[in-house]
Amino acid sequence: MLAIYANAAKIGDWSFDEGEGQWTYNSVPGYTDLRRGSSDGTWQDPQWSTEGYSGNCLHFIGEQGSGDGDTDILRPNSTADLSAFYTQTFTVDACINLDSIPLNTFDWYNPYTIISFGGKDALNNNKDVYFLRVTQRSEGVGMLNGYFYSEDGVGHSFSHSADILAGQWYNVGFSVDSSSTTDNVSLWVNGIEETKSSSSVARTDLTINGESLVLGAMYARSRSLNGRLDEVKFYDSVEAVPEPATFALMAGAACFGVLRRKDKK
Image 1: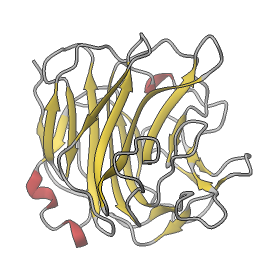
Image 2 (image 1 turned 120 degrees about the vertical axis):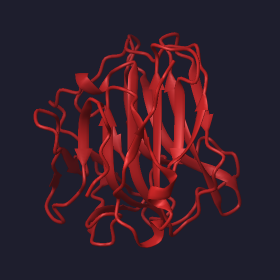
Image 3 (image 1 turned 90 degrees about the vertical axis):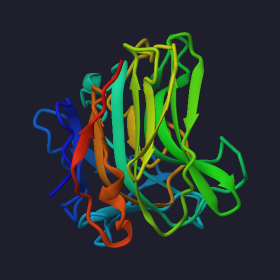
Image 4 (image 1 turned 180 degrees about the vertical axis):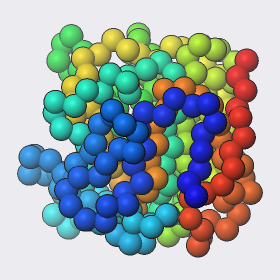
């Protein structure tokens, strides 16, 4: 039984149950499916794996783990309509199991990207809207980082205090509620939530195309994931965080549980 977000407007739900083929399908009707790899020769196919958080998953080998420097990605076709993902209030949620921890302590430019949503401004420069990633806290120890840009182009970064280690499954999430200014940013690791406050409004001023949504790397960049990815979900609202007890037996558990409502002021 998969986790259910009460009263949330779900726009993306990829469980990677296919186990084969070039496509993984969004279980939310009317929204985009994702394809492995790219026509770009340096972006390759993540591999299907049966060692998922809940059944099958995709295994990404980033440039740090790949001898040829290739980057595995997952993204829509260039013609996909991504307008639903371009919202000032959003939640992203995923299950990850890293092969290694990013290199270089506190190096924000060398992380493992889980989810990235980007676009272009009037000057045709690559920009970001929001992303979720793992950076290095100390040697061999990672930390979760959520990031969004406001419409003035300023980036806003938020980190979770939990340690992330290689070889373990974690449920991670990031939400932003631009309708509020108090406790309106949330990060969680295995159901342990930490809230932050930000007065900035997430940007919706960029030109978005069908390949602006990327799983496993940054938009039009590298900074790629090195590990397994499962149970990816997107919402155009902020609603719920998994109960910590759900993940007490994470090492051998499937992605299931009961969730509680997150009330926002």
